[in-house]
Length: 276
Figure 1 (cartoon, rainbow, N blue to C red):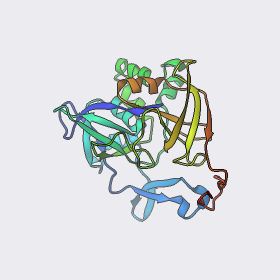
Figure 2: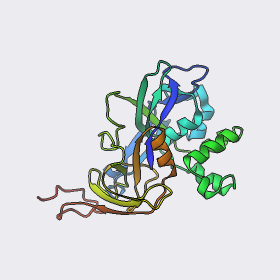
Figure 3: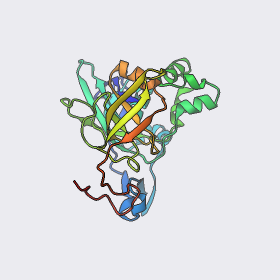
């Protein structure tokens, strides 16, 4: 599960708001590999130019180490580094400014490095038990181990860049460019499930045997969502949605609803319009 979190922060750097949300840097280069290799559809290569050579973009640790030397342009500043880290995982959220107003931000791009789960790392290190490795469990661990926290966060090399979104949107924008609906939108792997398709989902509530059976829409993607029968369920906005999202790791079944005449999704020739 995932959700739209609310963070405390400011549009400018202050004594409390010290952790930057960066816009997409000018030196980030994105290469669509499908334009050269159709079999690599949905894959992109990201990097930057050093001389005339394209090299990998800096990792999270390298961006953090660079500090003010990093060429990114902050669009806002967060008060809590853990909340900011989870905002990058969720991909969108809202920042509560000192005057009480909200600034909505959404995914703009990513540095090209794969996502590494810090919860899994804590379990491997013996710091948490598997059942404790939820978002809430990780936050509690961070509060008790502030000296170990920077190293833990830096272990995930992936880094997300943001853009400001209009305040009047009914929800955060997904990969389709349309607002997500809490309880009705899912993120999928577009190599297997086409974006925009209706999906019937049969699973259970977080940490429960209570059924969760409903029609949802495939409207988003995520770097950790890989595989044909895998989805990230969008719970909506706020703490209650965050509690549900953080505890959700359920088994389930999915039925993708498509027209009877539909091209092979694994074909490299490109999708054709289905016949009526």
